[in-house]
Length: 216
Image (tube, rainbow, N blue to C red):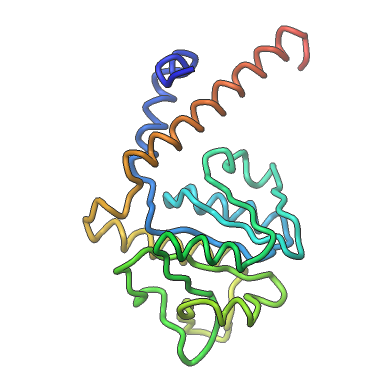
């Protein structure tokens, strides 16, 4: 079924909202989650990605399976392109082939403040597990470390908060540069839009089926 046929099942307001959000989606910033175990944190990070226009999220599941809390995510995962990986090596190779530089959110004397991170190439930011942070092996595979400067006694933030701050800063820097190539290409937009339309129409059909069967 083509896009026009699927659009016919949605309201004009919904279609306009989808097209507007898609036009602001970034291709030069992706997020990598390294074995996050708390469903609340995972879901909160996904909401931040959607809110700040990051379309692509990579999930490492070498020790912890990916799972969202629907009460927190509120279905935002259906608007994102989520790729799941059994280990970081394959994810890293995939991103490097696509021209991404990888930065781990880790402390260290060589860490770059998030506001100073160079954005002259595509960026993948790796967020680590709630307890151990980004594994040392993963840090070694990255191009550098990035941190949020702290000015109080606290030296770290919850991963969902750190992700929100980092994504907000980097996405705004990319947009303020006024370069069109940091957004999804027309081909990528078409692919994402088709997935969105399919998901939305299937949701409507399922709701209609439940209503027809008398399901509350």
